Length: 121
Image 1 (spheres, rainbow, N blue to C red):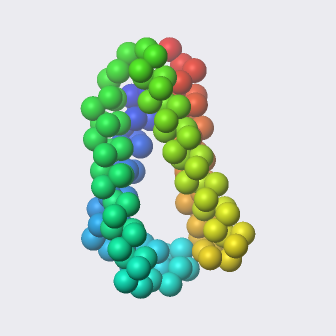
Image 2: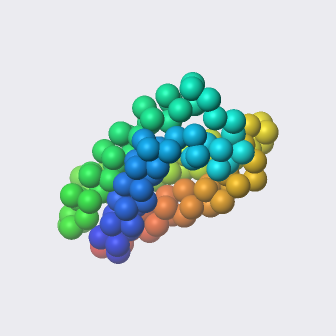
């Protein structure tokens, strides 16, 4: 199960890297957030983090059950729960519109998949 979750998350992170780097304005406007030079700057700066996660998950996709793989799962759980929680918080603050909640569902879903993969052998 870990292999499938890692590959899926790696592909999602790779796609986010490209979108954030190439089309930052479109990305933020997709959630009802006004784009500007400041948001574009921050979104582009965040993009390499997703590239790093994509590479890490892709290279670890075949990892056998170990303390290191469990640590990787927990890191992804914390990451995706954090992003999902921030999505809901920004919706609650009226910074983003309801479309951000769709992203939050996906983020919490990835966290849940990593939690399940962490428990699986």
